[in-house]
Every structure is written in structure tokens, then in C-alpha cells.
Image (cartoon, rainbow over all chains, first blue to last red; front, top):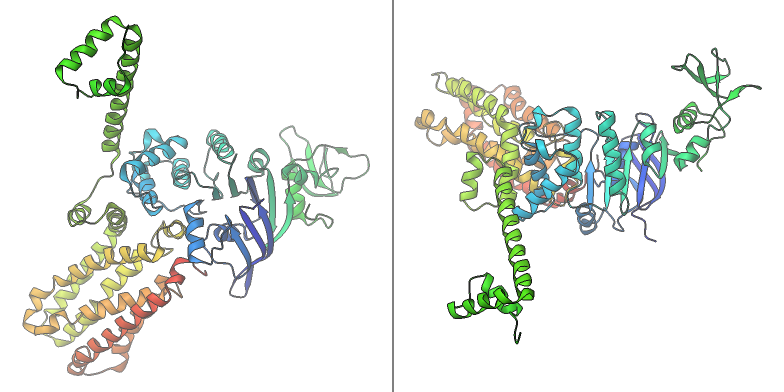
Length: 286
Length: 274
């Protein structure tokens, strides 16, 4: 089967700084979540997949095309939806005007068909009723949804979303999950996030990056499994813990090497991710 | 029943294209034939529903149609497709505030140019090309255009978008600067001596932006343009001489070189290295 995204030894340098180091990926349909601390290389990787940025070296195929070739790049861009990390919108445009503007840039030349498509994507993100409002009058969450709407134009095969749930309230995040999971049934969605609960709820696959390298590649359950036997609760702070915090029930939740006799509990994706960042030596890519 | 209304006759009847005798015949027949009445009724319903859908879509489209400013209307009347005029609109609406700033600075420069002191006219010739240069820097770029990142990932050529945006910013700023001509008409062709340097600086910044950000390119060229005349410390008459033919010739060379660089490095605009 042809992969929608295929990379081998993909690297990116900014001057002397190495942002991505020899990334090997094969992504097909479904939702892949990128996790990692700030500066891990998530945005750089997404920008490269979205053809916004050229890699420094390595092999890259997106939708079977080489973005380094003008014809291949054009083909990718025709089948791509992208929401950058810092979504820039024209505040003096209405939501409809803005998405219509992007639709023009996406070669939707016929005006009637284009306007129908703009209405469709705005309805998809529940902004149909406010499409005539100026963007400056929309809430932060609504602005994120305008950005998402433009990415859905033309029903793209590859959807690249850089931190799409930032600024969304819980209800909007739930709607976002429904929308993206519906869209991903036959397509490839790659998103970055700091929210492990989004990964747990939405992604088939999770890739954790740190300092430009893949430090984990597997399912959310496998990431949670990294912390199996290493999460326990106690009535007080435990010196064995790498990370610990007091829960709402007044007990302390600990992550690390559990001492003998500890009350071990089931780990979550967040626990696994925290252990990755804690640098526990035996954690490797699945 | 010996006959029925066929599909051809039915569609022509509903479209009002049957002659009166045939139409009467169809109407007489459907009064007594349940099958044809049902089929004709269904077809009429479909036509009405389709017509209603079309009418409703038209109304919605009219209501949603983006508001069009005068610049866009003028361009549309000149035959520009809305795929171009919308990009111009996006640029001009976003750039209105900076155009006001350019207008104010030029107003001050024009006043200086009308001064009896030749030194001020020299200052005007140096300051005036900076307006279009600032317009170029403001037309696109990561800091000045909020949609810059997104626009680099769409099928429309980035260089094409960029050229439309630069034109949409530079032309108004040149037109603003041209308002100075009536006050300077007694200076002969020197009244437009700022024009070629303006174009040269704008195109030069555009060409340089295939390597560095447009803001850095504009700052470098603008800095050089101001620093060189100041650093040579020429008498005013010699400075004006320098801003005359020599500067015009250099500007032409810069324009030709910038165009050649932009064309040969067009792939750098389409697929950014940083």
C-alpha cells in the first residue's frame, strides 16, 4: 500500500541548529498525533509535510509526490488542508470573506460553486450562523474554527493541523474530535498537540518527538503502557517519584519507579508521556 | 387506455413548449389516467423543487457575497477576475493604516521640498522612494501578512500572489508620492526623479527576499539608500547632480538585475528554505 506520508532520514537545520534529525515515518489513513515539548521539532515537521518549508536533507514523499519538484508540489497542495500554529486571519474580513479568499488561493475559480463550498465548510465547523460577522468580533475559539474551516476546503486527502485545539472550550473540543474523526475515516490527519487527552481520545497513532528525534512511535495504549507498573498513589509525597502531584481526592499520584508494596494504578497516556520526558532509560520506540 | 403521455411530451408540456392542441390533449388525458397524472405530478414537483433550490441558492449567494470596495470594483470593471481582485482587496484592506503613515510622511517631505533651501529638496528625493519600499515590505512577509504561512501551502503560485500584493501596495504609494508633482513642476524632470529609485528599491527588496525575509531585505536596501548620500558628505549641488542621471542609470540597472534574479530564483519563492 502507498503511504500518504513517507520520510527517510528526513532532517532540517536552521544554521547550526538541528531541528529534525533523521526522521523515518510512514503514515497512512487515520489520525496521527505528534507530542513533544516546545522546541521538539513538531512544528518544523508539520511545516515540512505541509510544503511550507523545504527539508535540509533526506527523502520525502507526500501523497506519492516529491515536494521538491514543482509539479509534485502543486499536486500535494491541491490535496492538502493546513492549519498553521499561529493562525493569521484578516480581522476586517468576515468569516465568509476569509474562507472565500483562501478558496480562491486554492483554485476554486467558479464563484457559485466556491461560495457553496465555503458555506459547507463553515457549517461543518458550526460557524454557519456567524459567517457574516467580522473576524475581529469572533471569540478565540471561533477564530480557530475559521482556520479549521479553510483547511477543510475541497475535502483534502491530507490534513495537517498544528495545535488545533488551543483556545477551544471543552464542548468545542468534543465537536472538533467528532469532526476530525469523521474526516479521518478515509484520509490522513496529522496533528500536534500538548494535550494528551486529545491524543487518547482521537489518535490511532502517537509519535513523540524530543530534540528533533522520534522517541516514541506507537498507539496511545502503548504509550500509556510505557508507565505500566510505574504509577502509584499514596497518602503523602514519595521520594521515589520522578513526578508527583496532589489529586482532588487529597491523595498523591506518583510516577517513577514504584517502591515495593506501593498501591500501583492503571497508567494513562499522560503518565507514559511524562515518563518519556522524565528520561527513563529503557523507554524506546515501540 | 390506448396511449399514455410519454416522457418527451411530459417534459415539453411542463416547460410550456407544446402547442395548444397537444397541451389540451395532455390535459384531457391526465384527467382520466391515474398513471400519467401521477407521473406528471411527480415531474412537476421535481421541477418546482429544483427551481426553488436554485432560487434559494441564488439568494443565499447574494447575501454571502463579500462586500466589494471601490478599488476592487474598478479592477473588476477593467476585466480583472475576482481571483485577482480578492487578493488585491486582502492587501489593500490590511495595508490601509500603513498607507496613511506613508501619506503623512510624504506630506512632510513635500513641504520640505517646497522650501527655498535646496538641501530640503535633496532630502525629499531621498525620502520619497522609501514609501514604496515600505509598501513592499508591508505587502507580504511573516511579520506583515498574517496569512503568509498559509499562502505558502496553496496551489496558487506564491510568486504570483506576492507580485499581486506588491503591486497592490506599491502602486497606491507611488500614486501618493506623485501628488507632489504639481508642487515641484518648476524643477522639470527632477519632479519625478524619485520614481525610478522607488521602483528599483521595491524590486530590489523583492529579489533579495528570495534569500532573506522581506523585512530584512527592505531594511538593508533602505539603509544603504539613505546612508550612502549622507556618508559621502557632498555639497548640495553635487548631491542633486548625483541624484540626477547617475542615480537614474543605476536604478535602471538595479531594476533589470532584480527582475532577472526574481525570475531565475522563482522556485525559492514557491518553496522556502527557512
